[in-house]
Image (cartoon, rainbow, N blue to C red; front, side, top):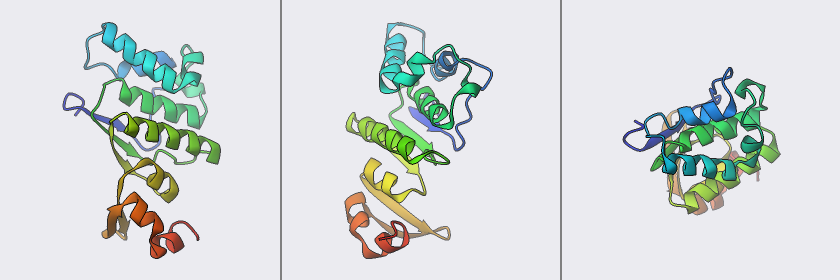
Length: 162
């Protein structure tokens, strides 16, 4: 998967708790050669998530849930994917951290990275994606652009509480 250009951010983050932040990130680049380009990617991840740069030597298990989510995303980005799969990236995060993750996903998409997002937070999904597919009871209920679905009265009532 990694060699095909697919990055994966699992539900529940699944960081390597006993390894440092930096070693977790470097594991994301295991399919790449360690060279100037890989070091540049590491710098880009630290720029995207400055808190990880500050905590690069800290054990990943000592990070907050939001910091671990940033680490999981950063680890996937280290492989330089063309498609990033994210499974419930906002799960059990504070509203402020959901905003940070949402902004990060918007930035990645603006930079040309394709995202496939499985998410229950409809607002985050609409903000981070261009197109959506809504499932109800395992069946496709609606598809369309994020803007269309955000304005759909059924979606607004059921998923946005409006």
